[in-house]
Amino acid sequence: MSEHKPEHQRLPEFFNEPFRPPLGLRNPHAQTILSSMGRKLLKPKWQAEFLAQAQVREMNVAGVKLVVHTNFQNITSDQTPLIMMIPGWLGNVESTYVLSGAHTLWQGGFNVVRINLRDHGDTAHLNSGLFHSALIDEVVALVKTLMSEFPSAPAGLIGYSMGGNFALRIAKQIPELATLAICPALSPEETMLKISGNIIYEQYFMRKWRDLWVKKQAAFPQLYNFKDAMNLSSVTSLTDYFVKYHTEYTNTDDYFAAYDLSKGALEGVNAKILAAGDDPIIPAKHYANLPDSISLDWVDYGGHGAFLENWQFESWCDRYSCAFFNQAFTNERNLL
Image (tube, rainbow, N blue to C red; front, top):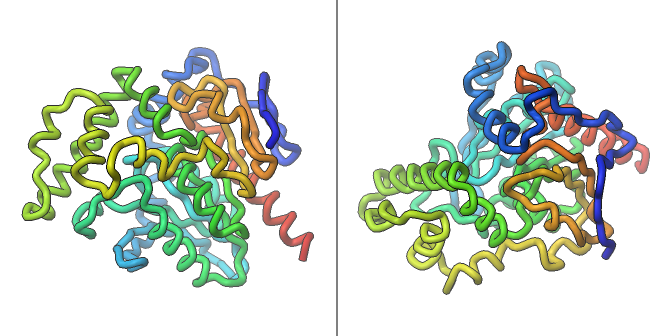
């Protein structure tokens, strides 16, 4: 295991274009917040058509129903590369960063599948069981099913934040995937502490989590009553409540341990991580001791998964991701 201590931007040969945020967008909180809120206000011209062209599929895997949205090339072959995308915690297939990344990949010639994790998006009614972040088997099964539909196509996986955590765990089980994790949450405990230390982020995630539970209770009133949770005042107390009453784990520590990737769990996993030194949610120290099998690319700025490079709120990360998969599949072809 090698110790990574990136001090300045460190980029690969396949994409040696330094990230330079414009004047006024260097602040990590501005990057993080505007990546979501700003993009919702400034919807790009391509977005409506891209959403309309997507095919929505409800897939039965591992005893659960999961929904994916696909955008395939107009002219495709059985060897057109397939890229699967996993949003962050409480994000979904229409989150602005997912749409932006998906559109760039699609323009780059890839077939793109955006994945809703259980209960994410408008899917709370599909399964009686509640989502939690340790539920990896159903997502592995989904990825394997999608790959089996295109057996001759190179396959890639990209995950953002908690979706990056999922992507890395999936890569451990499906090593042939070209896997990219954007600002992945490696330590659930420390990530929660960072969220709870900022009232804006904490209120944002608490609102979204409560909204999910309201939808779940409406869909399954005989199974759920979240009345007591609505009065809890911190993301920490919500997590403790959730783990105690709605998971199989004895306590929050055991729950976090089930998907913690900061203590040697990534040994032997072949993947790429892109991280920002000023990420306000994922501390830089998370990436201090990665195994040699993990390749880390590092930029000084970018906030949490944002990397906004202009005031149109376009993300440098989208072009980076496209370049990563092009390089990964070129290398794969050269090995054949």
